[in-house]
Amino acid sequence: MFRIGFGEDTHRLEEGRKLILGGVDIPFELGLLGHSDADVIIHAIIDALLGASALGDIGMLFPDTDRQYKDISSMVLLTRCADKLREHGFKPINIDVTLIAQRPKLAAYREEMRANIAYALNIAPEFISVKFTTPEHTGPEGNMECMTARAAALIEN
Image 1: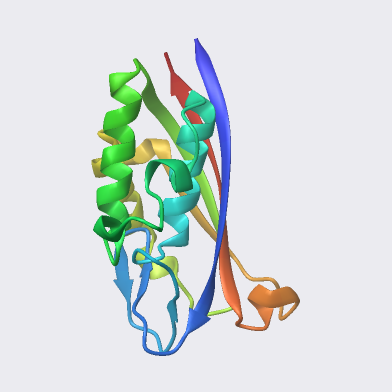
Image 2: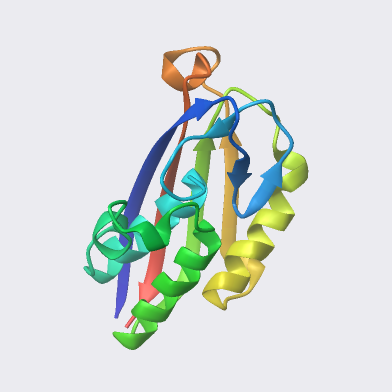
């Protein structure tokens, strides 16, 4: 049986933080604020996978009150999420994720992001779609206050 899930995540942009997106360290003057590395792309994917499997959400699985997750790589969290899905008989099939951000331009990093996500989920990169859109200087993303990612996941039981 196939199941679909949706995930969304937003993190504030701050000086003095690294910008990690899709498991890639992006050179930029601002980074995302969060308990982990704040990778909004990966967090949205985790929530989409957990939603599809009805196994909770990222905050339940990796609470920000737990010190073991402080500054942890979101790629580690994605791998652990994939392991949890497999333990419950689920297999990721397809991921589609969109990042909403005014800057920086990210197309040059797309293939590395796809490869990172595919590796963590143990599926081929051709089943991973990573897209970027600019809000045309509108809203909090357009005003460089934050970045938001939205993801859809197809899994099979």
